[in-house]
Length: 105
Image (cartoon, rainbow, N blue to C red; front, top):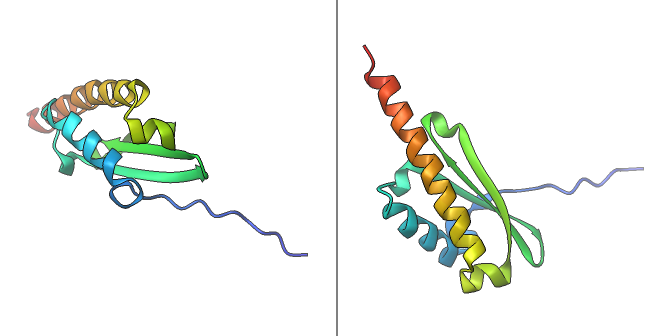
């Protein structure tokens, strides 16, 4: 008997959901966080849900993950906006802390 494993593949969010990718990048840019400070990945959980992972910080060690329905993504619901806003605040704190770690004598 062979076991069939369902392989979970994370894809670049730019490919998986361009609308959501641009929304996140634009919202984070308002908080002075640039696209090159982030890794945005997504993974389809089922036909109606995408799990979004935003990685940031030194070596992209920090992550924020949330699952959204395709309907919430299409309408850019308040749930998506709140996730991006809270991630922006966390990301800013992390990037500042990383900066001061590097600049410390």
